[in-house]
Amino acid sequence: GENVEQHPSTLSVQEGDSAVIKCTYSDSASNYFPWYKQELGKRPQLIIDIRSNVGEKKDQRIAVTLNKTAKHFSLHITETQPEDSAVYFCASRSSGGYNKLIFGAGTRLAVHP
Amino acid sequence: ETGVTQSPTHLIKTRGQQVTLRCSSQSGHNTVSWYQQALGQGPQFIFQYYREEENGRGNFPPRFSGLQFPNYSSELNVNALELDDSALYLCASSPLLGAETQYFGPGTRLLVL
Image (tube, rainbow over all chains, first blue to last red; front, side):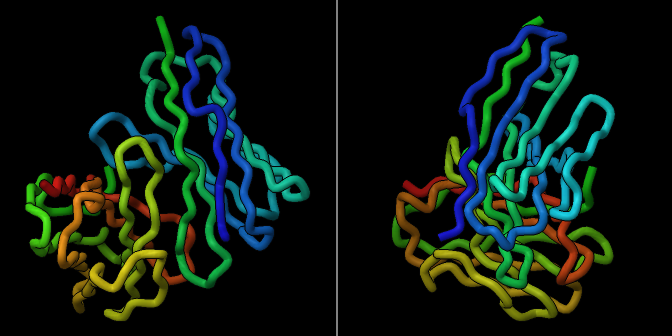
């Protein structure tokens, strides 16, 4: 079935370092890959997304890369700050013709001052 | 901050009871999806509504049902509650049926005792 695997489950970095979160999807027909940030007790917020016709997308300190052949996509955060601490979820859009997102299990990122 | 709202914010029920959760989508959004997020996991797709009809469903039993109203607001109903139904229930709206981006509401945290 459709599946998204996400690694690592927890990530601890020092302020200013970079953080990388990796995901693998199973449905080769998936064409849309969003990343959500969820702070404790709050809603998931879309931080960046990428479509299958693009290999890389950047927005200030955040970038996402996509390797369609390997069915991998990754989130890169540079110059991390304490306010980046949250749970990050990757997702892929199902090819089933409606807006079903399949989420990874999440990565808890802690940025230490 | 998105315009998706949900009510109530928290709810406690006992096993076997029924519950109704409500969602008001962002202005102009006609597609609503519901997700269940168990503690420490990523959201799981329950179903999607478009023009007052269900047009996609995840692996949830029939006791999970929904409605969408002409103003695009939506309800999630769960009958015969089980302990495992304890979770955060999120709704997400999209501007169009085929639009990829989904905006999440703050969720309703349901505890089943």
